[in-house]
Image (cartoon, rainbow, N blue to C red; front, side, top):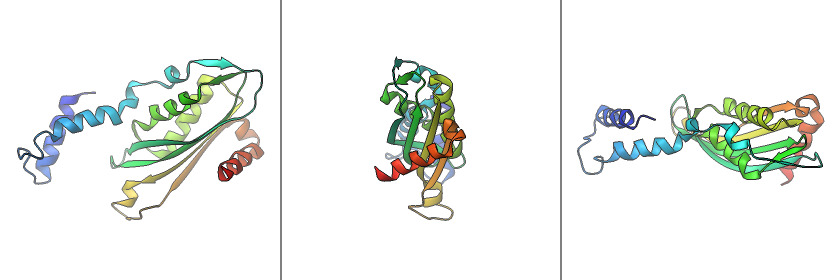
Length: 185
């Protein structure tokens, strides 16, 4: 990540909106924002393969469900936050991954300029490619500040996206069972 370019861009933005970048409250803002972007866009420096590589052998292939994984991301259209919860279900194929690794996989994709629809599919694809389970389903629920604080200005609006792979795609009953479990929990 090029910190200097970010600092320059923020200085230009401050100037462009008519502010005085040399005043006390804004003097260090370009540096703070450069550090912030390094953190909130850190997903570019990570790979899902790295995060999901440590697996454990299991004798059963019962569904694994991790729900309510909180995430924060930036909309690639307006660079405003969208945030919410990710729910993941997968059917192992002899191997499972540590539960925290699924949350880390979410972070790899959430910490990039993103659209929710792509992020949902990217998480599902990464789990399928690395873990090679029988199937995976990912549900993402989010509020987008580009809809809440600008444009149509509808705070509280939630968008839900789904990605299904493997047996979840081939057997709609599996999808319905996962969705029913989500509403009961």
